[in-house]
Length: 193
Image 1 (tube, rainbow, N blue to C red):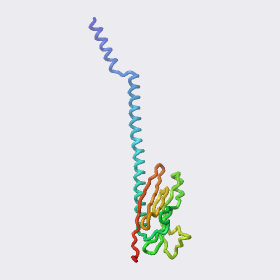
Image 2: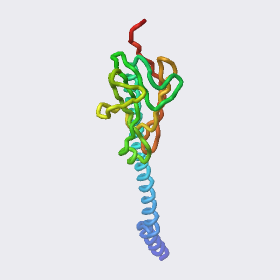
Image 3: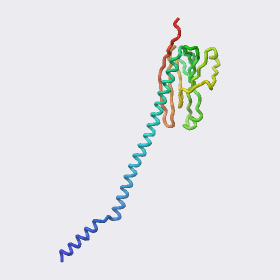
Image 4: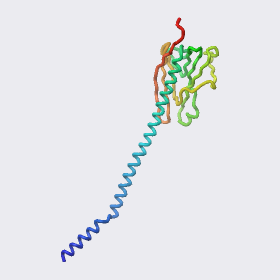
């Protein structure tokens, strides 16, 4: 009889251990929800950081391309007209060996400024024959201008000597600013006297 009672008790215990209690089920569901939340946040922050990295890489490429364009244009020059040596300006006037005056200047980009929520400009290029250009009253035709760089927050040109200009530029995205500082020398292929 003791054996039968022990056997029933053991069987009862075994049946009870095969099924999960409600508390155990709730704990497992809560742990699964917590784990899935952690995994989801990890992937969503990874996606967000990838997007930010892509925006940064795109802007760095844009800055480098703009810098190369500016260097190529200035290298065509033979003489700086404005600013004077030691002065800083947001525009650069220089003569080239073909008898033209070339101008790099900023033009506000209203649409981009509105979308970014900060003042941004386009760096524009204008070329005109020396005979048609009055340095005391520099008038330009916007239809003859071309875009050199976009997303420019600020740019300044400082002529450090007769052949070199130092350029400091800031480019802006919605969240970050990128700085570029470089020097460009004139090609000076004019006649030797």
